[in-house]
Image (cartoon, rainbow, N blue to C red; front, side, top):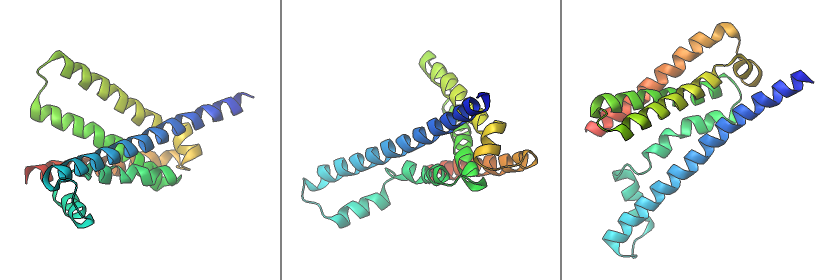
Length: 171
């Protein structure tokens, strides 16, 4: 009875994480689409073609967050090591991006400090959940001795995404 209850807890935890990623992907994609349509309406006054939409998609960064969310979205559907790496690397990306933007911009107001603290706690909570033994062993079939190496891979991918995003925003 207790094992079944623990298994349900693990399934609910991973289900919540997967649903949050899926909802976040949908929200970010819709927002990118709306911003693209808004800009098209401003410049073409409702007489735009599909080619105008595609041209604007390639020149603006409205869909860049959606592209970054493709990694954890792929990870949602892969219950293997690669799925765990993709999901965890996205949380490491959020963590390093939060720290990078805080170092770049600083924390000037109490609201910013509060947002930073809450975001930091939530991201670390999600990383901790993904690194729980029940999650990485039972859901993603990782062995205990593989977790450190796999975490390093996920962290490296997260840092790479942060540095790439910072580099492309400078250009």
